[in-house]
Image 1: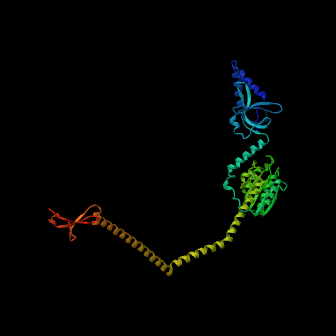
Image 2: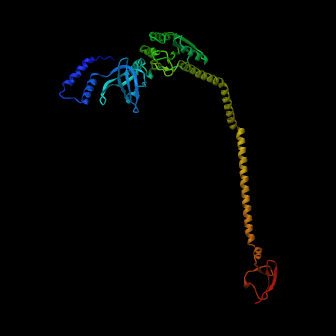
Image 3: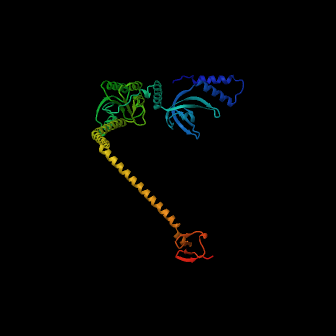
Length: 415
């Protein structure tokens, strides 16, 4: 942005008139305030270019420095809040372009430049162009994921769009060969740097499209400065990459390098070798899948025969289970089982009865006459052997026997 301002002499005259119109003597603060108002209203925000000198970083995070050229200098301040949005850390001696406004620091009466944005001169201008075009194309939806084409899983024909003299091509081919990739590579040579590069790159993409069919196109070149890679930020080229009918990989520069074709392409590889590694990895994975499928297919007849044999064995077992012989065998087994159970029942019954008889015998034995005599009792019987259980059955002079445990004794009844 270019601004035209009044000459310094006109400004001094305006300031003189302002002071002369006053009907009172101004204090230093009042004069400083008048100067502040005049400067800050006469100079809208603008860009200036200069070298950073006397850079001081305060604990608060604010940065104070001088912007100077070969003949003049101006005090400048970059506050912490503005610095946090820069994406760039200014250093002593940097040539830079600053955007901001002129103001006056009243306590010291210094006029200074309040920096709102700062970037290195040269690359800073290119970066600004890059950001503006990126934002424009992004807002158009050119980088939307929905627009991107799906990359093929198995790549046999590749179109390489690059310089035939660059190291990127040799690195790419070396990786493809070393990893045993088998396929067809077509090279579409073009400039990758300089004024003619965007047009040649576009023509190479068109040529690859017309000479297809290709499974994949790779747009690539090695690393370099932002100026070296600038062709890949050309708007026409970026739009052509986005509209390319062939799935396209952008593999430009090193891992930290970004160009606009990276965002418009269907896939961004960090380096040319990374693109080659991705292609060969996909093919290796697909080849492994094919080999695995082939192995499974070769094993399929053996597995099927084994399954059929198992099924036949199962059917034979089921058929044998339903045969008359099998049923008779089952009946025999049932009878044997029933007989065994009956034997067990009879055995248990006999055992129980024997136990019961023995128990009754024991009880009878314990209540027998002999058992009573053994416990110290005795009984009386007549000479005929009949037990006399009442006294009224005895008469005087009757002969009786008293039976003891160890024998009998004859007695005569008296009164």
